[in-house]
Image 1 (tube, rainbow, N blue to C red):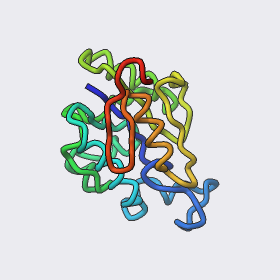
Image 2: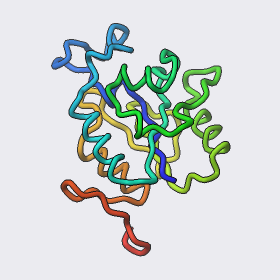
Image 3: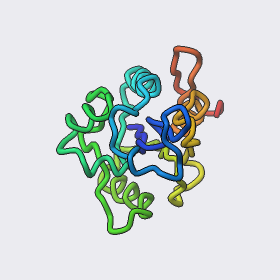
Length: 168
């Protein structure tokens, strides 16, 4: 099983002049479904639908504002089938404990063989499991390509292929 731990703000949406929201004032931006970039969501969904053992787990603060996975998907426009059944990490005491939240989730899911966290903030994730997005652009094609490589997959145009041992 391969898992993408997903942040929303700065990943599925962008802090930029294009959205009219600047990094210095993120509050109106947070939890605003209208600002989720549908192109980014479609790219992520496309990739997840191509690989049977790839699922998304939400590590974003958005997880705390959704009643359930269906509600989260309606807020972000993600397809419910790309989410893992245990679709969100458990909130710890400190917002900066995201790496611990991911570790706790992984302990409960020993079936996970590959994982990557995609976030616009570095919460002390191990480098080999982390892709940091630029919050001004959100998740780019190159970010997605790097994230997939970290979980043993390769993006070639519209094809996602598994990296064979010795290739990576």
